[in-house]
Image 1 (cartoon, rainbow, N blue to C red):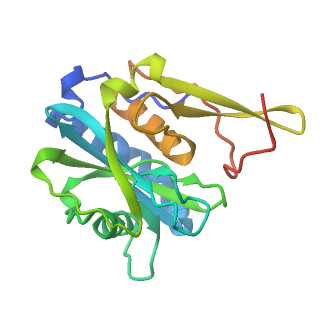
Image 2 (tube, one colour; image 1 turned 180 degrees about the vertical axis):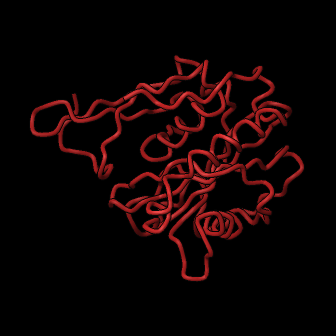
Length: 228
């Protein structure tokens, strides 16, 4: 099934412009982040941190500490985690986790909206919350050393270059199962759920330059035993 048509693409340096922000806010609001039923079932949220680095529109990533317990230790990720009882919604979860992981106090005004919820490898629904941090040079990141081993950015221009895009085809029961994206040639390989969210973000920001080529499984992202 073809992905959504997000409208006309902005100029390369306009990915974070006021016009792009208005377009994306409207589209994300209309999409509804998966609807009320999905929102009620959400177990976690991540922040998708748009930013600029020396004027270049970019995405900010974290590398999780290998000392963490659980299946995501050592993974490239976006700041985020499980929803707590005190969180009013997915946006509150994403902002709280970003504060705890990176020491950034972000207001809801920086949030553009929510992408559709996605299942992680355990089947938990995760909501990606898109936000613009602004110029990274104006921020002081204070990564929590117990959770974050490293932070790094990738320019959108890098992510949009085909030579930096890869795909992994998975097989289930001897037949083609699904295809997941991989983003290459940065400080770390971006794969798994973080790559899927990156792909959806590129599709939102640059619809005429990026077309999703992947087929994501409907229930969970647990890797099957064989690859094509």
